[in-house]
Length: 204
Image (tube, rainbow, N blue to C red):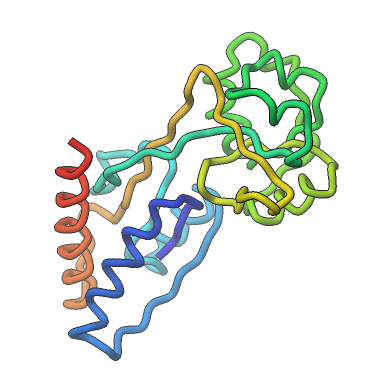
């Protein structure tokens, strides 16, 4: 399975945990990467499922949308002046060294920043938010990322503030349209559908 970074991955972990109660011998392989890397493996049959942080081609793939959404924000050292703000606007970011995934810098952030995107400076790109958070903690830049990925509890040395206007990203479980699954993969998909339905009801 190829995964995007998100707090919602816990839904898949819970589905696997449930399956292992009746199938203790269950084995699985998890890989991470950007959309292009993950979808290439899915197309080649190296993965049964992929998790994407962008809307897939529904003509080619079947999809199941995760019940929640990931909220974008800015990660910074906890003593930074921006940490005093309740939310971060695009003007707050002008002149700052910013970290972000290359994919999101090209798609998500321009949708939020609009015409002011040209005034923003990408200091460096990262595929994994944890690695970028280390650079942020060392005061090399500010990380644009999802909420709930990095520990920002008191004493962590880091703080997170949401973007304003609010920017959200939906997550999708994706598989090939005419995929033939193994019995255990079928059971996994059925478990995930059931779990997502229950979570969606709770959110209503």
